[in-house]
Structures are given as structure tokens and as C-alpha cells.
Image (tube, rainbow, N blue to C red; front, side, top):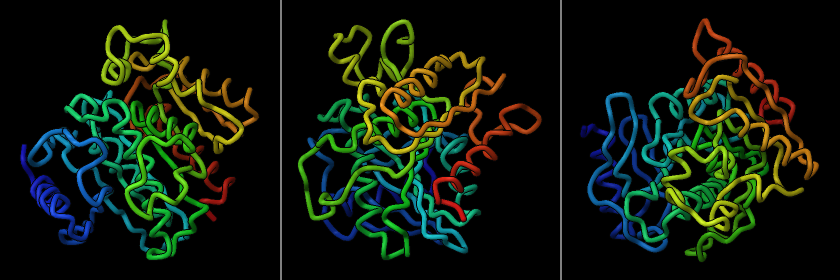
Length: 310
């Protein structure tokens, strides 16, 4: 399905290929292309993004950030990654509701449309991590343009997006690509990271996820499994972590959040885990009338604790 956003990002693709300024707007909506030219390694799909009726995005040729500006900015920012098993990005039911929720509370929200490894990128599984690291550097480099405190930039990820933001938090010092400009002198470390029903480990017996298959295939080596499991990289340098997940999640086993909690505890990283008695997977910002509606309140209190909300 082609929509106005698809056409706009198609224009962004052409402009990026020509290395012209990377800020694009349509009405009150604004996007920032992550890279000044083709992303590291090249490859990938052509044309405009395919966006489903429910807002799931595929055919991503131009990784980007969509800006949600608050009416009354408080100086903090959040980069949001929707899930979808690295096969698509569920922006309609995850990223956009989260962005609106954050902006309503004074936080600049940036929706990350990252590359999907299955779409032919030469960087393979590194592609989404490259985009996430670049996104934090880009927002930090241009923080003064929006009166954002460069030390109050957080990460919010859902499902596979939680895996991506978990890697961004745990591997911020890892050079996933060679610097392309001065923006890459900035830190790629989020100051806090909230991971919502995340995929954390790619190891057995929790290895039956689309995240695992999309990143490292059906029969990965032990080395690849360890390399792409978030818990393998948690150290004292990891920022504070917020976790929530339903006990009846059938897509990402709830053991994932407990594995991350244990890794954080072992590394002496500030971690807060809120299990939910029921709610399944993919509940976004919570479903009214279910236990999942409680988690945004816990998250808001955690943001206040870490000075992203007044």
C-alpha cells in the first residue's frame, strides 16, 4: 500500500542519494534521514516503503527518524523502535502511540524506521544496529536545535525493537560502522533504556523467534547466537533499564525479561522489571480493561526517577 508517507520517504531516498539536506517535511510531520548517502555497506531494497493498513512498514530503503515535537518541551528525548521480528516495523500499533504519549508529556519523540536485515542489506544483521547507533548520535549532535539536553536521551523498544534498543544500550561502545562524518564523534549510548516485551536472548530454549531467524538464520553458530544475544553484552556501562512483559507472552517467552534483569543485576546496572499477569504479546502502550493498561504509569514513574520527566 502506497500512502503519502511512502511518497515522501521515496523523495527522501532520491535526495539522500544525491547528498542534499536530509530534513523532509509534509504539513506538520517531519522526517530526518539517518545517513548523508547510502547506508554503510549499501544494498537493500528500492522504491518507497510499503505501509500496511495497520501501519506496519517494510521495503525500507531510507532509514529515518520521524519527529514528534512536544507543545511544551522539557529538554529530554526518546528514540523509539517498534517490533515486528526484523521482518517489518509495527509503527502503527507501537511506535506512533508511544511517540504521542511521550510528546504529550513534554518529551521529544523520534520514531526510528530502521533497516530490516532480510531486505538485502550488505551489512546483514549489523544494519539495524548501525541505524540505532547513528540515530542516537544524530539526535545528540543536533540537540541544541531543539533545546534537548544531550544527557537526557533515552531508548524505548518493543519486541524486536526491544532487542535492538537492548543492543544499543549494552553495545554503545561497539563500532558497528566506520564514521561517515562529524556526527559520528557523538556518543551512541542511550541514557536510559525501556524494553517492552523484548526479545533478549537468541539461545535455546528461547530461540524460536522471528528475531533470531531474521538476524542469524535457523541454524546459527554458538558464536553468532552469543554475539546477538543482548545479555552477552550487559556491563556496568549499560544505562538504567526498564522492563515489562506479560507472563502469558507466547511470542517472546517472558524468560527474556528475567534474563535481562539477571544480567543487569550481575553487572550492577539499575534495572526495574514489572511482570504483568496476562496480556500476551504486542499490547503496545496497553489495552484498556486489561492488566497491560498499567504499565505506562510504571514507565512514567521510572522516567521521573531518572530525570526525563519533571
